[in-house]
Length: 321
Image (cartoon, rainbow, N blue to C red; front, side, top):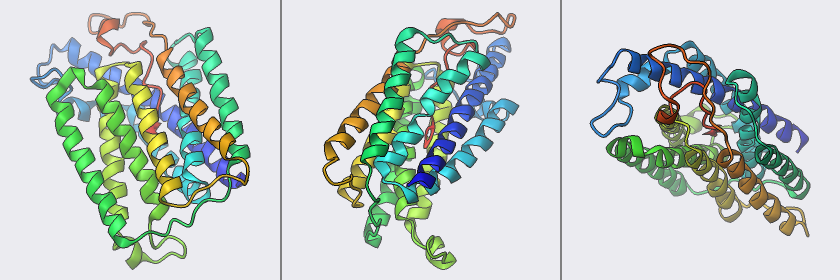
């Protein structure tokens, strides 16, 4: 249990730091597009184009953030195997707190009293969850369930990406929710993956859950990048947290046999609800403040792409992450 908790905290730190760096890179790329008066940076619906998303992904800040995301993914995958999903995913979603604190230094964001209060609420809820968590379920599922997970991941990411592109600049909240659901599916896939313990390469490569992990992870990262490009939208961040935390937590209890310690079910439920509510509050009370103008290419604050704007306070687990 202790090793699993430490692993989840380390994953949360990687995701939180990576999220800030990705936000910086995405916004810098958006400013360059605006400075060049580029019309190729947006779709006809006002959302970021594939080319602008690719340009954001090759900034050094975004690449370093992505490396941290991959490290966080590995640590999060290990935590998902060692802890009940309602605990591992909630601890990882606490990267909101790490992101908020790092934003003070890296993005010049000032945290308000409600934000600090929300951070304290999240930390307290995590203590409740750690106290109440029992042994994780076995994760034994039928092969058909693995195929269903793959199909759901393809529909979620494929259909969601199309819908986000059609909605354009209005899709920030939806992109956040879909990326969170993608990271949630990734967590479930890691938990049920065959061929891991003991390691068996043919079983691993033949498991549809492996490809569900790839689809959900890559698609979730893309949608998270789109949300960062669209702007700092607190509602989108809250949706990401709910998607990556609530859904896998419920599936872990109903499908994978996760449970709390005897007599501590009410503590687990309370901690879970309070943690999600606190994480949403951290995002909701996020304060957006502009940094000094970088020149004629800087975007206005209300465009949501200024570097001084509060970042999307989540990673890919998620991301949230």
